[in-house]
Image (cartoon, rainbow, N blue to C red; front, top):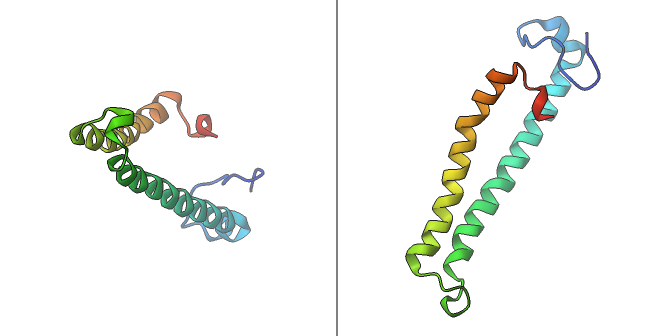
Length: 98
């Protein structure tokens, strides 16, 4: 029922496929999703704080420009979240992201 490290049948209500190994793959995916989300949030929050301490004499950014740097990271993340489902629908599957 399984092909390598991928879930062959994506029905979590089917106990046969779930017990055959899909639960291990799903837990692994959940674990890595939590880890990557934590790292992304940490980098985002540290970048927002670090940008405020950049010296004006070196970089020439005003306070508003520094705050815009943090907002730009949020905007890029939001756009990526909007474009990802569209690319998924256009390409027909999620295999393109692997």
